[in-house]
Length: 410
Length: 228
Image (cartoon, rainbow over all chains, first blue to last red; front, side, top):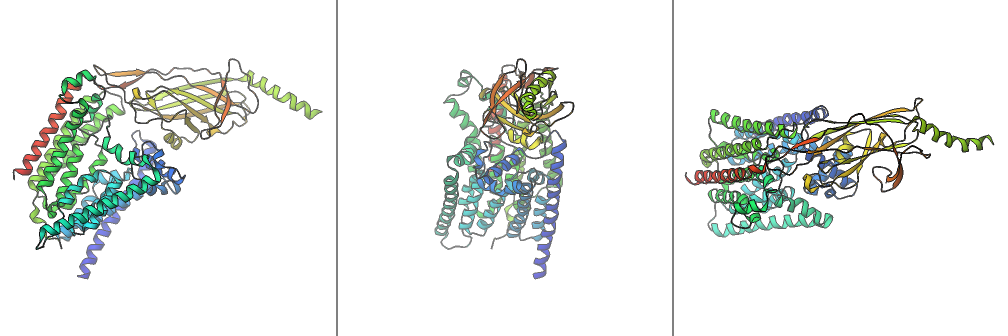
């Protein structure tokens, strides 16, 4: 038994080392690329993190940077960028990204009790070009994803105080995991309990209590240090965010035009208050689907798939959608993947279509942003197409998901 | 007595010499297309500006913005500040025109050269803001203003048609200094800049197609969730 465990550990350690090496090499490449190419490799937010870290070192607020809309913890994490070398923030993001693969490995081992599948799922993350590129561009979404997977792990182990604490940390780092609160809360249960209802009630209370206390403590502490600017930038901005600039979102071009349509036109289009109707029309589809998913997958063994579906729906119906948002659902994909049965042909079709439509969108966006051609309507058409491709992928997953493969969690 | 003569005569000679030799050309070019441009400025000086600090005031219309942090990171030879905090995400109609102060040679004084000639080339990344859409779509057009060149010298500069203005001494402090404008010739003028804008005629089809797509997707997902 000891030999088996050692073998399994060394296997994941070996692939994690290669995964980290690939990421570090890309971090180095990014420096060269940015120097010679018109389209930069490094994410624009990476610079914002670095400037915020510079402010923190100079005893100023990271929110002095107008575009900094994250937890101050991210700025603290990026201080080696300023103190030692500008590439270190990317290395830190890469380390979190590789650690995410390790957490995927542990989760699959817990739910499917199959070492081969666990390693394959971890490899799916470690060698997946999308997360590799996103984290080496300096994006930090894998950090909050680590906390989501940790929360999921503790939740599946029915340690609800810890799952509450960890989910709260992920919400503090990146507001979007708040959508997971309901699926987590609904699935607080005990597998073998005589008085199931009573235990469920206690479990829910434990989870919710630890979640609220942790989130309130983190929010309160940083509000004390940085004041209202922290609340405004890291919470309120994300709730009310409206980005009229082109992005993958279905609503992108509509928001741009809507912002300038004369009141007389918009009044003819809607029955209620124009602003309220506009917002409701956009929010309702996402809320309806979140609730439907939570109702359908309301037990603990479905939680990984439920979280994936929630994240997927939230992302494809979000008012703003950039490629970094794909990490939100991609990080959850390997955790339930052994319960999806698809032919190689179908997998190839899904991957090919998903990448192909994105490439089409990116080409139209490149012509607009870097060549100055007016391609707004083509970008909109590509966004619509991308949305339907995503709906097709989600439906394929729902139709082929089989929770019978999930083993009893000890 | 000889020393005293030096103190009186040298500044006078210096002023006269500068006056005689000032010949400056400034040329600007806007490289790349689309929303992310590079403004290259090429300054050639034939003037005795030894120990003078040089400053370019570049006035930008509200249609564009520069990111001071980005400039400071990418340029080794200049320091930059703006006359106001810029909202990097605002649209053109919600923004104001602004001035960028570019301190040449990282605000180090000009070193002596035998021919009194020096050349400065710097590049500013300039980003075009999103503009209001219009009926029929297409493009909106705007122009960039001409820059102004200033010097701040240990001794007074006496130049024809020059003006003295108060501007920040350097890129970081609040201190203000007297700067003298330097006359220059500009060989070429920047052409108008075109920026693509949305088409307001698209509003109704975009409105209908967006919401129809969103709700169709919702129905498809709900059907697949509860039909098995």
